[in-house]
Image (cartoon, rainbow, N blue to C red; front, side, top):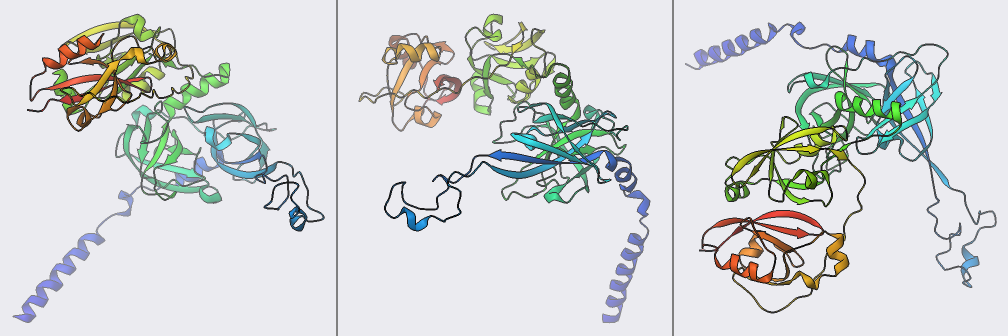
Length: 472
């Protein structure tokens, strides 16, 4: 019996081994030809940055303030009292896109650079000129001059890239020049948590990208560039299996503007939006959570002029569906200023089409929070409110506050569970506008126990919606 069992095990092992030995290596991708063909146009970008000295004591190593009787004990006879600015070196990767020497890399690679040097894999080096860069897109355009035509790469169509496709990266991780890594596309149109990159529809992959790979190309299997490697998502600073690449179609729009005009113009709608949660979708009777919920409409913005309102849910913009709120800035930002487009919104339980002339995005200074003093009376929602007249007229003008009530204290109860905080301005409850304290009291008194309704607040100058669940 034992011999029979051993024979059976041996047969299974032999069968398994035979089946694996039948795999043809030709079924697996081979990247050697691609790497050989593309490497000559991939470059190393070396940067010198000039920064002020960190020595905050005018060059002295003394821990005592100037003029102290102990200062001389820490001075050295040949030490420079006022050291010059320090120079530090950093770098990344890049790639040549034309025979006359245009080079692409990331903005963060060359930011604040005083010198930029481009090195090819044949050991040639060139001083590079910065043509222009865009921080929001994290794209920079450089130019080098050569006596002969330079090798360059073909820019591919990143829209054709599919999840699961093989892709290859070439760059200089940790200054290990011209390293080749490969993987597959994990996701498309990805936003990165906790990063100010809301205008970039990243390609996510599992290609090994590390510090120094930034600015290098991501190739499809045809050897065409489908993106610019930009960042990793890691808790340790090293590769953790998630990498992000700027799609080439998006980057090319930025590059063309930089080369032609030197500046980048983005579309602007003038709304702040938030994600539609299941609770909010139910409270608006929207059905499946989708779209971008408008929390605030900026005064005199394209959105206000077109008739958008707080509480509208944007379902489509310029013919493109909005599945998540983050989809909206990606779409609007790529539209040329002054273009006229249509938006499909959900308002008062109905869909409606609005035409809007897109504006141009400009930098907006961050708003300062509104601080309110506390009071001592409660109401049905377990909060204390007062008139917005208690807010200075300057803040009312600055934050475009025209109606609502000011939250002065929050107790355990429906409001606290909804996330309402001291200093919030409540402008509507259950889609009913609050113009005065009397309006607020009437609306709250008619709320049914066990109901779930949207409440709009203004916090730090930004409007947002919360779900208010009235206790049974």
